Amino acid sequence: MIPAQLRRTVRTLYAFACGYCGVTEDEVGSQLTIDHYQPKDAGGSDEIDNLVYACHACNLHKSAAWNAQHLLVLHPLQTDLSLHLRALPNGTIEALSPQGTLHIETLHLNRPPMVRRRKTKQLMEAMMEWEQQKRAHEAQAGQDLQRKKRLARRRRFR
Image (cartoon, rainbow, N blue to C red; front, side):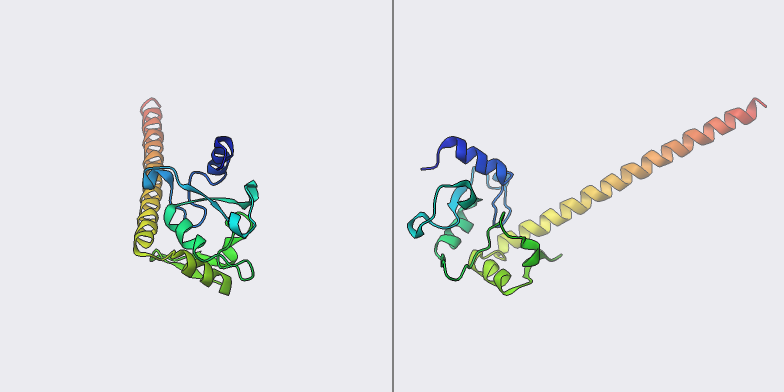
């Protein structure tokens, strides 16, 4: 059993999100699981470098596919995932390497709910960016109006 303090440390290290698929505690409505990257029954330890915060689905998919000779799943903090995976605008994850392909297939990262989640997240990010640009434009328009009013007042008093 993982001590409570170590569990809190792992949760924080992974920003309260699954290290494999990225789903957060808020999205699932509860804490996630602590996964032993190398399972204990395969010689793995409770050391922090071997612990991954994982959603139930990713933990289940990964544990069923452990192979020490041929790693099917990339370690989220010890591997530069950008060398192996890329998110596409359609919400799917694309492999950039053979290891990326195994990672995606083993964890079922393109399962329909995850694709929908990523598409929704992309849409929300685009909407927030649009809102931020709109606010900046409105602020600039307000500043321009104030400048024009000051110029008009100056001209009246000349």
